[in-house]
Structures are given as structure tokens and as C-alpha cells.
Image 1: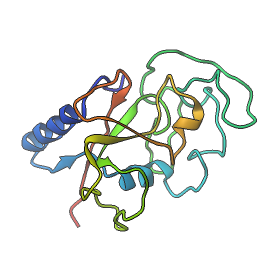
Image 2: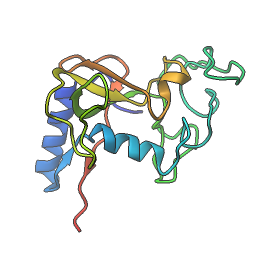
Image 3: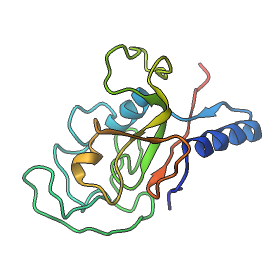
Length: 170
């Protein structure tokens, strides 16, 4: 099962401890890195199709996104990879399951965002941090590749988790 009910600060601490243990620099992804990883070269709302049901991601299927029929609502966390739908990068559950913390402070829009994928740490609300990916109890619309939200950095909503990244040596 994915980690859940984690504050942004707890996710940062986990990355620090993992870095110390392994000697690699683990961290939370920037918002741009998260979306790049989610899309995996696609331009559609979801990395596998334009629309989606809860038959392929863990979301609230009782609320439709486009023209798809209503579908199951599992109403709980499921195991990572339960739907057997990885993106082209081999990543599972980028849509739905749990909201994932990003390193960036919250900005209301992308005006002035870095174009190199780095963390946008200038300006914004440092007390609020970006969440991406949607969650099991949210509609499919909020689980789209481009959907974004925020939470207070010290809060840990029941559906907030994280995914770690590290820079590969070149």
C-alpha cells in the first residue's frame, strides 16, 4: 500500500534519512518533474487515454469526468499497481490512489515558473505545498495529468503521500 497521511515536512525528512542511509540525494520531485513523469511523453488528460474510469485508476468512479459511464468506487486505498496500468516510464498509479507531495511552494498559476523543470522556490506560499495526482476519493477530473492542488505543509491529509526522486549521475 502507498504511504498516506504524511505531511510535507515528514516527506522531506524521509528523503533526508534515505539520502543519509544510501549516499544518494533523494528528494521530492518538482511540480514540473512530477507532471513530466506522469505524462511520460503523452499530451492526453491521462497517460493512457483521454478519459478514464475507476476500472483503470483508483478514483471516485461515481462522479464522471467526460462521457464515460459511472464506474466502481472502491472507497479505500488499494495496493500500488493493482490496476496493472503503468505509463511508458513504467510508473504506476500516477493518477488517483493518493495525492503526491511536490517540493514546490504553492503558486496560483505558472506565470514566472522556471522553464528547466527545477523547483519554483521563489515567491509562492511557503506554508502551502503542491500536491499532484488526485486520490482514491476524488473525481477522475481531479486525477488528470494537469490537475494540481495544495495542502498546508504541516498537514497530512489522509490521502496525501509522496514519491521520491534522485538525480542520476551523468
